[in-house]
Structures are given as C-alpha cells and as structure tokens.
Image (cartoon, rainbow, N blue to C red):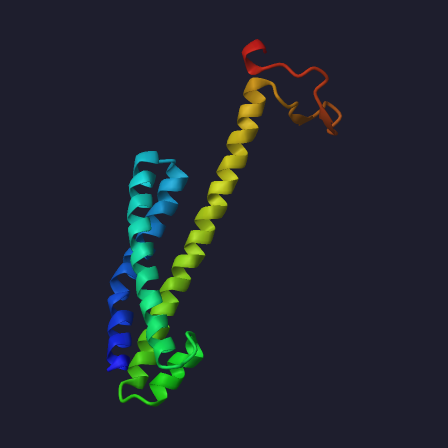
Length: 155
C-alpha cells in the first residue's frame, strides 16, 4: 500500500516537473530579452510548481520515515526490494530525479545570467553617473584610468 502511494506521488510529480523545466527554459529566453512582464508571470508560475513539488517530496519522505526507512534513495531501494512494483518505483524515481536535476541546472544558468546582467547594469550606471572612472586603453595601448571622471551628461 505504501509503495503504491509512493509511486503515485512520484508519477504525479512528472507533469509539474516537466512544466517547471519548460518554464525555466522560457525564463532563460526572457532573461536574455529582458522581458520583465513575462519574467514576472514565470516567477508566479514557478513558485506554485515549486511549492507543489516540495509538498509531494515531504509526503514521500514521510512515507519512508513511517516505514522506519531513511528518507533518501537507500530507503527507497529498501522499500522497492520488498515490493512487487519495486522496479517501476525505482525507474520512475530516477526519471523524476533526472527531470529535477535538469531544472536545477537550467535554474543555475539563469541565476548566473541574472548576476551577469546585474553587474553590467551596475557598471553602466556608474559610467552614466560618473561614480567610477572607467578603465580604458590609452594611445600607447596600455590600460589606464581617465584623469578626470565626468558624468556622461557633462561629456
């Protein structure tokens, strides 16, 4: 009985995990295009999917713990060894784990893209406001700072 409940929770997470993966791919494109309304919509959808996936993850852990098994892959393998649907349980768990790993990888790339864009924007703001002297190459080809920084509005 617990094994079928666990299998059902795993298979129920396939659709939200796949939706999250597609959202993260769309988010990547929206980040590069700086499409803020789309990013806001994606964020709301992502949060709902993540909450759902976390709830199911907790339920799966609770099932394993209630059977006095560790709430990890080893506990799942122990349960699968005692179950007639054990091979399907492990296979579906691996599929879900793979989907979630893909989501994490794309999310990490999106996070790096955000950091890069933040750094570029900060640099542009400093140049526009005259806050920091941009380093440039001089006539001899060496790297130097400008002698007098001026805001772009005064250039």
